[in-house]
Image 1: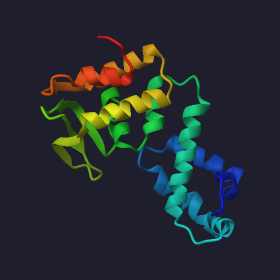
Image 2: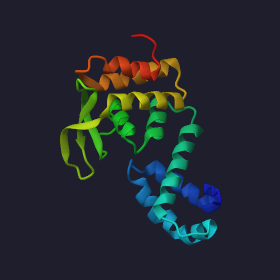
Image 3: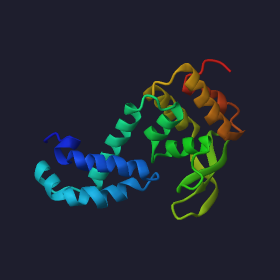
Length: 196
């Protein structure tokens, strides 16, 4: 199988146009727009470069991944919150972080308000789906999954001790009811916060 890079199938002008589009889009909108505006017109060239018929959506996701990675690494002066939002854009963890940071007032889908953790370690939070329909106490995932993701993101972003503390505080503050008894402590540990 032939190894293809973004620059093998997209021109510099197309990549710059995609970056500008990415900066303007709300989460969940980019792939559809980039496929329509950039990828679909380039498909004959992409198919020729790869030697096969391809799905335009795949190359939209590929562009989104490349731009997300570039955005989070090219802006060293971004604060940890901006880096976390960029790195988790479009994911469940991203929706949780956006809710915990209060950065998703109009986005859909989105979590709303504070979360609760059940006695068996499941996280529940109000949710608004893509059609704008609200769901009370929707499943946001398991506490153990959140721990893994919190640790992975903190390590990926190479957060400082101070940033890890703020990160843990924001996510811990998102939980208003903890029937498991140790959710905030587990989040703090996953974020790499030693004590507290």
